[in-house]
Amino acid sequence: MEKNEMKVFYTLTIQNPEQHHVKVSMRGAYCGQGKSMTVFMPSWCPGSYLMREYSRHIRAFRALDEKGDYLTYEQVDKAAYEITWPSETALDEREFEVTYEVFCHEISVRTSYVDITHAFLHLPTLLMGVEGVPLVAPELRLNFPGLWSKVSTGLEDISPSREIFLYRAQSFDQLLDCPIEIGCHETDGMMVKDIPHELAFYGQMLPHQHPMKKDIETIVTTVAKTMGEIPYNRYVFITHLMSGIYGGLEHQNSTVLHFDGARLVERKSYIKWLSLVSHEYFHTWNVKRIRPKELGPFDYRREAYTRLLWLAEGLTSFMDELFVLRSGLITLEEYLELQKNNIKSYMNTPGRRFHSLEDSSFNAWIKLYRPDENTANSSISYYLKGGIAFFILNVFLKEKGKGIDDFLHLLWARYKKNPQIGIQDTDVYAMIESLAGKDVREKFEIFIVTTEELPLQSALQRMGLEWVEDRSENAYFGIKTKGEGERLFVSSVVLDGPAFKAGLNAGDEVLFVNGLRVLKSDWEDLGKNLLPNQSYELIVSRIGRPVSLNITLEKTPAEIKEIKIVDREKALKFLS
Image (cartoon, rainbow, N blue to C red; front, side, top):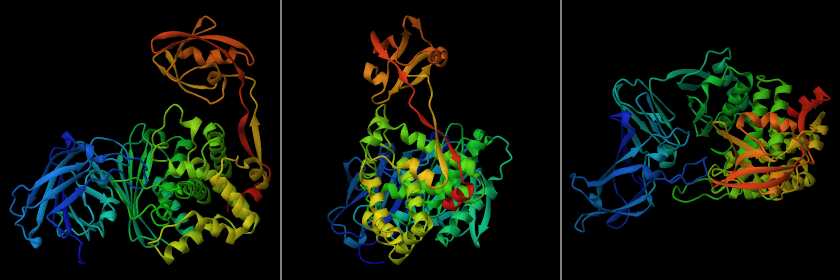
């Protein structure tokens, strides 16, 4: 090892899974200067841009020397501990073992969860690093109940026997990037271009006719063909199937997917599942390798601000559904239905008038992952608008005789030339200009740095498609509601809508409209009988007090109803 590099051995032990704790041991020999060393728990994880403060689940922290005697330590911030050796300890005798326990009972792709049926270990929630010292080839041993028979992870297996579960990574970053599923889950596999791909499924699903394994293989093949190669030696899909869950998180040679197993029967939900698989798998190239320069190497204790998440997630959000279409797993009509829903969501987000894609990316740490009643009024998702921006860019590129694939190939070639250097916005703009000229580059840059409206209708027309609007005569409140039993509450108020102008607040309970009692079950039918351009008296309960408001309803705003195919051959050419 080089000077100031350390070898660290971790052990994770699950003794009583019903108590949801994991015992952690971290052993090594400190190689830094001085008589003290600082160990830290990550506060966030790559791919999920929010300070999640994983250290809040630590208990029973201890530091021991090579003889098993306690070392002095002091917690120096929310997630770091400074450990001090006695003054007489020689610099080459600073062996240590740090032990602690972590509570693991939060279901998500970015947290750890342990119960009597299985363990999902998201390692940023469990493993501490050493401040200022690179860890070389860290090893991880797993101890868990004997009734559990399987381990699924992207880590290199170096177990000397079947009774020992021992794994190795090249670095601390790579170690944290490899989630682990332990239990009696179902496993399967497939070979794509002679490379093994493991499928691990935990949970239940209703019987359905969809060939999930075959479809995943088709997506993998399509993405790999587009990118020209597969950049790993092995890949693992870890899927959790539980009621009401949805999400995914990318890793260098694996991904974790959450989906409601009861909904896979439905065609629309299955398409959503396929898009999720495609999205997280494409991240293998875009983000895990082609990355904004701020996203690696990582400082796990501080925010990694970047203005380029529109590339990391927006491009991926465009490609995920396109890959599913190109795989032959959905029809053109189904693909356009997905685009219609994307456009409708974009048009129903007033925050697009205030938040550019650059702003949305930079403020991910305080906005996207912390939605509230006003989020849609003040910001726009870089996933949503970013995906639409690349949809339009593809139109521009096709008209210049190129396409989004040419852009992807430039991104990948740049990465391969120097994998250690992340990308910047100027690099992206230069690639676009090299493909399609200065005019396209300038138009696309406006999409990113300003809040100007995207030329959606024009882009669709140029593809041989038609934007069809729904012009309803129904009255429009401009609110979203939620029910608690038969009680009806306002959950959010749309900027500049009738309710906004009347002073209705999120949290208000709607009691009466023109003296008529309103219950949750009445709301939909009542709305059909109210008239636009008519004033009504509302009585609401606000923080326990009755409030009277006058509201003048408006006509429901026109929104996209359908993307109609005018020239099928032309549309498919733009999407090929």
